[in-house]
Image 1 (tube, protein in one colour):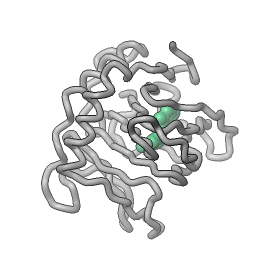
Image 2: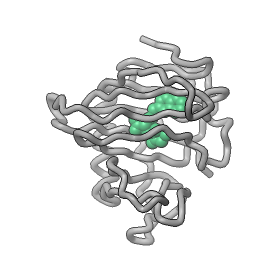
Image 3: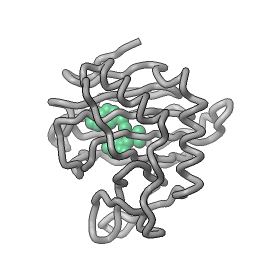
Image 4: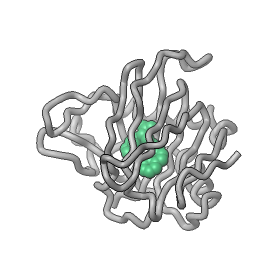
Length: 203
Ligand code: MD3
Ligand code: FE
């Protein structure tokens, strides 16, 4: 099913289910080369969400700020290649959501354990706001907060389940969003973890 949550945002329920095995194999390949880590925010606190990246560019945070880099700051090596399954799914989902011609070059992989959360923020470290972002959720369910263009705007709560894909862009691209603290509702095969990866055009 397709649920419109904004003028140019859709939730594609279960869209990633047929590819789930290949996508999880991709996550494993990426994490072997670039392990999940808790990055520090400019405020100096470690994030409750652990992250890694793949593709030509990866998102990083430290005391100096947020930015995309070509190398993993941990090793100085390029981020792992984008798994084929990520790239294919992202292009197909973007097309299905009326963003044809999406050419991603970056993927931020988030790992949530029980209690982890993402406070309201905008994704604005990418160069080109015309490109959409495609998000894939695997494992435990989460409540996604979909706000407006001001931090104080009322946020809609959108539950996201294993296999759901969200595509957002256009007028919704800079809306505030976040994730409520994760409840421990173990997934039958993945256990007490949620993986969300967002495929982007960063460079
Ligand atoms: C943004 N991740 O990595 S993605 C992030 O579930 C991030 O890990 C969240 O925000 C996560 O930067 C959410 C899904 C999403 C869906 C709809 C949106 C993000 C959105 C609509 C507008 C803006
Ligand atoms: Fe975000």
